[in-house]
Length: 112
Length: 114
Image (cartoon, rainbow over all chains, first blue to last red; front, side, top):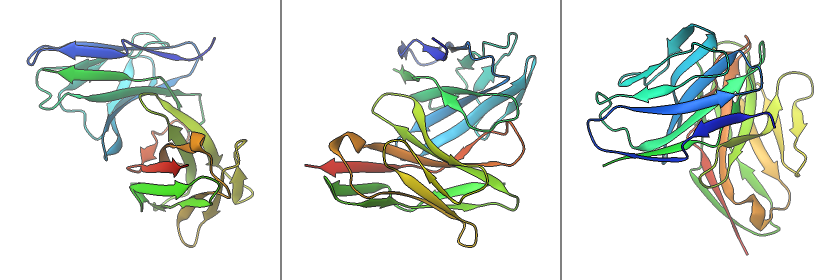
């Protein structure tokens, strides 16, 4: 089945540790995105990539890093510099020339 | 830059009653408009979209939204809701050019009461 796979679904980490969230798509989409969701805040853009080996910061990029070495993969690293990392993280992708985004099932990160 | 305001954070409604979820946007350029639905602990699913043409767009499960350029609105309506419509609904906007990230509102939690 075609789609976007985020793993793991739930992730627990100790404060001060870096953690990497996986996002893989087999839709052959060029663009990929990472959003953060907090209760009552909607979705806020962290990073996005419109093509392999290129990415841009979103509105809340501080404390996060990404890479785009392959078209189908766009991992997000939450670093120890992110002051409040506990949140629901959503990955999305969109086809070339289209703006509608298709979402994965999300990863809930809890930092203790 | 674009922005989206969803005027109600929570909307309770009785089953089989009509509902309207309000969305206003701000943009200096032409935009595309979307409504997404999210069930608990899941990703977002596209409900409907306005790209061009008819200003009234409909989904397969009875929702509809009307693009009103003069009022910069894209309100979502359903004439008769079901328990299964209980979810969070997000309005989103993007610029006309392709592959630009969506900008989301803060969401409206629709609770359908039996």
